[in-house]
Image (cartoon, rainbow, N blue to C red; front, top):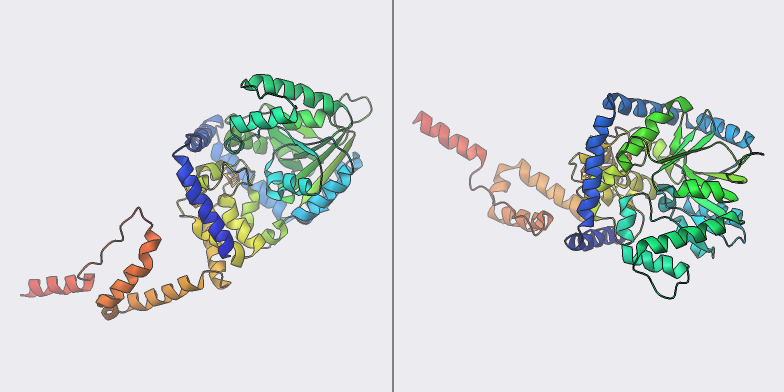
Length: 445
Ligand code: SF4
Ligand code: SF4
């Protein structure tokens, strides 16, 4: 556990230092702050839509196997192949076996692909990948600065000199990509929603990358968490509009793609072969938790990560998968409380994430359940538990709390928890009881 905790703390402190050098940190927060406050004005009954999302997600989660079977039957009968992947390694293996020896493989950026670290996993298996799009969310821009992006793109184009003009590079790059996509190519994308009663794969985006890949590549591999499922096509609009509003700042993102299977005879675009990889990766474990399972209602708008006062400084710059309020709940359950339980304690319980979440997830409550489990699983640091026991003993006895030695020990033990920015408060010389007795004596006298 300590190793991950150390990495986490190092990342926070490094990024806190970088934050002063880059206005982008605050720009990302401002972007999401504006989106989430505007979102309430786009819908005349915002709270009612939130409730509907929660209701439909709970409905799916309470009968997930049947909804998954319905989805699979429908999309398979349209000609797609559905594969179940237990975890990230399994998903990478399945994707690799579909790719085979193909050398024209395009991968977009998406939440689920980041979660699985699929780009790195496939690179590790020797797959030559073109990662296209700078990403749909401002975090991707943070992790890939303009200079870095230009260097990468001009490198891939074999340009001898790196031009300073972003537009030239990007337009040459797009032309090159389109030419390559028209030949025998494979697209790897994530999906935002899967619709059970219509067997549809839905993607919502502004940059149009997944739309382009789905239109022009011969094979498409779509990855989706099993929690992306929604019950029926009739409710799809609630989900797409809430996602668009929170993630892109408009109630209808520019590209909303619905795929019901591979290309049919007579259709002019779309993949000839479609594979849908349904990813578990710890989700069934979360589903078993009576309280924490509501975290699977998330529609992945990333607003909570961008606005959390703790986690907004954890992400960015190095392009590793995002960590946010969701991970405070999911990671300890997926990886074990011993390894990732500390994430539940990183939260300050400020409530910002619950306030802005379009899926109505009550984070503070879920985080407290996780903390309780951490303690029950003995995953809280043993030193901290000993400290708490000593503190409890001291606080329960007036006499011991007044001892100068005890006060010194308390201050010494807890001072570092206050950090360098705050002063540890001095103990009052007199307890409430002492003051009360004094006043009582004075009145009697
Ligand atoms: S409640 Fe915790 S996880 Fe949520 S925004 Fe506040 S600090 Fe972040
Ligand atoms: S938990 Fe809520 S705010 Fe956070 S990404 Fe999911 S839907 Fe968005």
